[in-house]
Length: 185
Image (cartoon, rainbow, N blue to C red; front, side, top):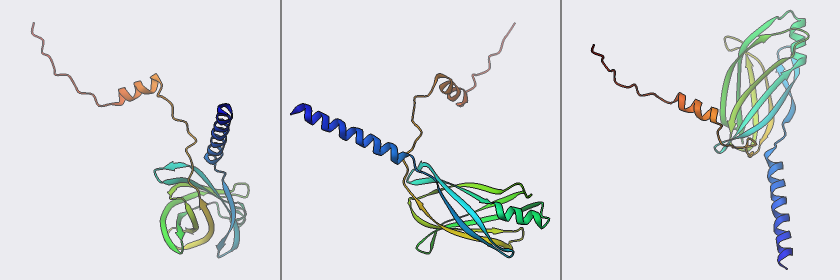
């Protein structure tokens, strides 16, 4: 009877470890949104990755790609661009978090516009809205997509610091100078 109970406990522990391991790896979500511009609609590929937790928030990496827009801009003679990416995470129509980043880059027919940024967001379901503006604030394009942000277990194992890292920490700590000694000869 005791060995059966031990087997059951061992199986439950093994199952728990497997469930935790699978929960620690959160796959990226890639969605295609329509980027609405004056020149028409272009696909904007939005990849959202979940890197771990920072307190109660999930660290989210958002990658943007617009290959067709890049090719169309290059064909019209555009060589570079600069502007601002404004965005917001909305829940139930209410802005939960807003952000903006400067954006610049080169454009040609063989290079795809890509841009990535990090945000810390509480787990939940959101609408992600993005607006690209030219210098001076003129809106160039906008897109939106649904994003489901999970709580993610940290996948980075905590280990004891090595001798080198402990030394570096010690060397980087403030040093109290010793009083000067005077020599008399």
